[in-house]
Length: 88
Image 1 (cartoon, rainbow, N blue to C red):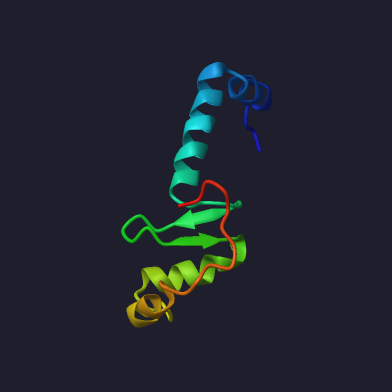
Image 2 (cartoon, rainbow, N blue to C red):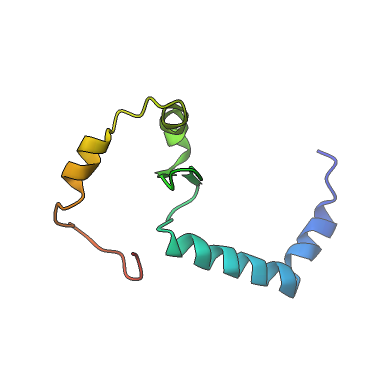
């Protein structure tokens, strides 16, 4: 599409870009992100996983999230079935 492919690949191989990727990956993991793509709503911190979740993101942004604060309160203390090492 007219993009400078070789230059982009060369830049992606630089130490500065590799350091930025490492830093952003560490930051994402600290926020509970796993999987790609993950969408995070900045104002709420809500995470959505997978491209098929885009309609859910749109509903959340429009204030039409079917998961109410009451449901979240109900679910928050349920026992975890699995815990990913290093997750919060």
